[in-house]
Amino acid sequence: MNYRHAYHAGNAADCVKHALLVVLLRAMIAKPKPLFVLDTHAGIGAYDLAGIEAAKTGEWRSGIGRLRQMPPPALADFHDLVGDTDVYPGSPVLARALLRPRDRLALCEWHPDDAAALKRRFRGDPQVQVHWRDGYEAMIALLPPPERRALVLIDPPFEKADEFATLAHTLAAAWQRFPVGVFAAWYPVKHRAPVRDFFADLATRRMTDIIACEVLLREPLDPARLNGCGLLIVNPPYGFEAAAVPVLAALRETLGEADGAATITRLADE
Ligand SMILES: C[S@@+](CC[C@H](N)C(=O)[O-])C[C@H]1O[C@@H](n2cnc3c(N)ncnc32)[C@H](O)[C@@H]1O
Image (cartoon, rainbow, N blue to C red; front, side):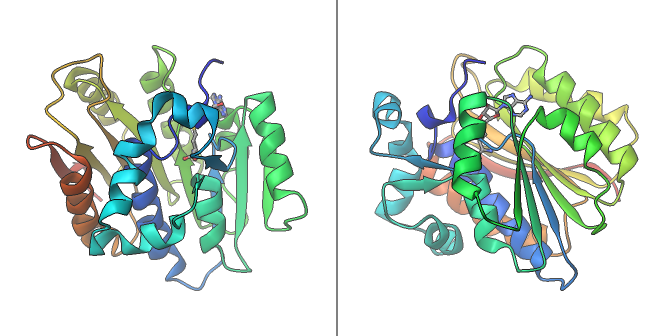
């Protein structure tokens, strides 16, 4: 396991993922029933933008650094939750910030050092469970939850060549166990072909009600670069799409180049 998120925290892809995560969670906590949030690839929870790793790549400067210079109104909620300090919150800290007292958060992380750091961060928090565990395996084991309402965030590092296939396969297996769950899976867009293949693979698996929210920073022509990313959402909650449109447009406008794009594509009907 070579991937360490500390080198990439707060970059443009993180901003897209986290701004959409906030929209998803807001839509889900609008209903009073208890919610279970499962973050299958959680990282360490929060990242030091003044640290050695962040400085080495400087990626955050073209992500949260750019958003902070002139935060667009559509991203105000995300920006307020992130704050203006050197600590950039990852998905666990953002999700925790939005939980109500009746909600639960389960975090899985497979890197031993990162899992230990995550355990330290949430020690003593009765609403958060941290697992040093394979997130794909946990996604099957922990679903369906007793609450019968859940948001599952799947955010793998994509360092393995078969990650798209593993993601499609595991997502379909988890959906079989819990077809009413809301699943949000992050994916990179380097060039179009792997994403097209991923969508084609999903289409063979009979899942319903799927959308893909994408922000392209530029035309995805150079496969050596991360040219954009997407969040695939199964069972998007009521109100999500309408709320996501201005958020995606603001992300594209602030973080993208002239030939960037922001789209919501429906991949499977309800
Ligand atoms: C993109 S990072 C996660 C970032 C985090 N979700 C956030 O938004 O703040 C991916 C994480 O997955 C971890 N990881 C890799 N393989 C895993 C697996 N099979 N199960 C759980 N975690 C894994 C990596 O160590 C890394 O911390």
